[in-house]
Amino acid sequence: MKRRILVLLFALLTTQLGSLVNPAWACGCGAMIPEGYARIGVEKETSVVRWDGRTEQIVMRFVVRGDAPRAAWIMPVPGRAAVELADGAVFDELSRLTAPQKSTRHYFWPREGDWPFAARDGGRMAGAAPGAGAPPVEVVGREQLGDFDVARLTATDPDALRNWLEGNGFKLPDGLAAELKPYVDQKWEYVAVRLAPRQQGKKLQGTLDPLKIRFDSDRLVYPMRLSRTAKTPQSLGLYVLADHRMEPGSAIGGSAPKVTFAGKVAPGHGPLAELVGGAPVFLTAIDQEFPQPARIDGDHELRAAAKDTPYHRTTYRYELLTVGDGIPVWLLTVSAALVALAATAFAVLRRRSRRTASA
Image 1: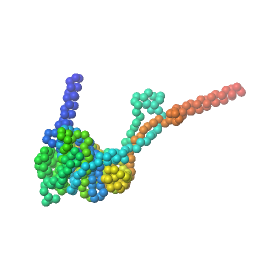
Image 2: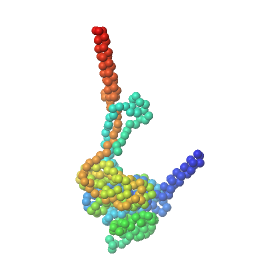
Image 3: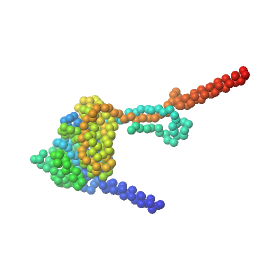
Image 4: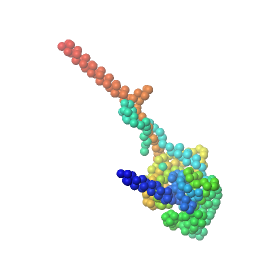
């Protein structure tokens, strides 16, 4: 028995060490590559997509772990892109807008935890079910955005992109290079962002400053193909801001996308109002899981749903039905029934007694 426990502990330790040595290179919409032998992994990614039929803007925020002081982040886009720092408050506002509604449901008969049953736990919460002639690599801009020294470039040749990355201290994994080729065939460009905190010795850890990518597009597309190289299951959370309720054209190899919110919003001020230009828009929140990232077979193309049907999740709190000062309705009902039965029995007995006496 002791030997089996030791073998199990060793296997668990090996699994944990392996997850550190082999981080997931891909995140939901691009690739994060550490410098040299450093490690970096994206634990969580949240993205906001704004599309007005001509221009697409993607605001993303990463929560990362690892020991990398610098990293390169790559994202394929269908046209020339601009990169800037975004305001993280937009995520707080969207989280508030899409938070589940709270409601109470009452039940009649007592359950475990209600009198007269003994309570095993104190909780009674239940929830209801987010160009050919161009040079192979062209640096189109460089600026300091928060803690990041951002170098924006476009590349039409994956080998040239590899050379640029290696010349700047980053090694492009073979698997990732292979996944970039389909974008070259489609004549897409890449955006490579160098992430380098200004503070000496600072690591890329925790929640990074959000970045915004903007490019022209006549269709709403969210790049996902690079996530095929991820070694662990991936989660995608999207806030989509458009004229109508939006939905993915297919699951692209993941589980069925789930809409967690759908409805018109009209932000009056703040970063969300800035992003949408101050006009009312339809907000669709979508969550999707990718248990086996290798099955991802393309990018998400989102389209307008057949109807702008609103949806808002509801979280229910279940409570025993009571009246007055917390008196259970079931107790009053049972008591009244017992009193009625007793009165009926008394009346029957009294009637029989009178008949007997009169006889």
